[in-house]
Length: 408
Image 1 (cartoon, one colour):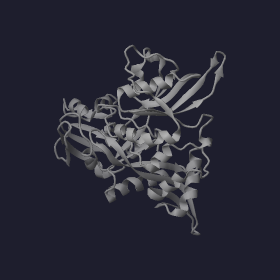
Image 2 (tube, rainbow, N blue to C red; image 1 turned 135 degrees about the horizontal axis):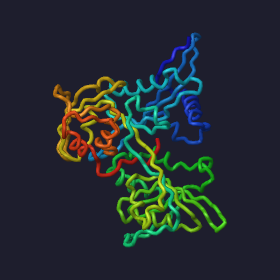
Image 3 (cartoon, helix red, strand yellow; image 1 turned 30 degrees about the vertical axis):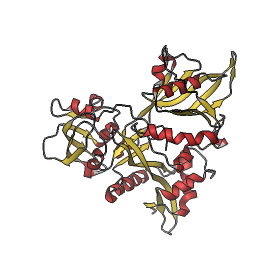
Image 4 (cartoon, rainbow, N blue to C red; image 1 turned 90 degrees about the vertical axis):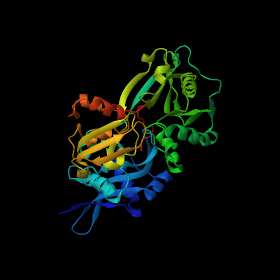
């Protein structure tokens, strides 16, 4: 009988790894992107394999960890295990491959003292809760008609928004991105490799849209594609925004005005933060039709190390009774103490618990998104000591809705 095992990848696994992963995501792997091979060589990837009695080996599952930094509330960019390429080959599901790969990742991080927090984008929402991941960040998929008016008095500033060719625009992007990402929970850092991935512009991936276009402001930028279109009333093109990054309210207003005033365009689509200023800029906010979606799912690998890596929005002294069926070292009562915006301390406690919750719910609240009060309203957090819930919820809450503008 074949034996299912998980092992680290070796250089010769690359083609088969990418083939299995691409097929699982209903894609076709053709190597046109050199940065993908570079990522495979420099980050941590594993495969699940079936080993036959004759010594043969079939690769049936893939997973990886990218060493990224994610901005935590009040603490700036912090190392995170960015989990990616989690797939199981068709015909090999329900055999324990996914569980084995998740255990290899999470238990491995714990045993080696690796990143205290893991994060991923979930292709299917029901999968990752059973491994202790909680939905921690969300975004809005917006569709806004072109020429939609701003409310009176919006300050567009005096600086022009310039549309620049790629070679002139690209050097201007990273400094602005770094200013914004370091302050906004959920944003990832980007080195040269990850900028190459974000700015990849292969014709076969444009889906009928134009090449990437760049609108640049001294304090922001927009990356987008255009698509020609004509209807019964004339021009009806589309702008598909990849990202708008603005370090000031004026820059945000100027960039959105530039996109909405584009000639021959009937509408603009974009994935934005839940609290992106665009909906507050519009004179008629109902013109921005939005679909609410989730982005980052967060897993606290080592709860005690994770909780001290962020800052808290208010004083807190609370004993948390945490359940964790997949990483049992977290299942305990923990005392969390912190002053507003100061360092926190976490230790095991023999005192009576004030709140009871699962590690996935703690992960959901970790970036300051869903509050503990909201989770309690759904029965996911239990208040055991009257009056303990609200101050703890205020402490975990952030000043901005966590957002991750980049799928990894």
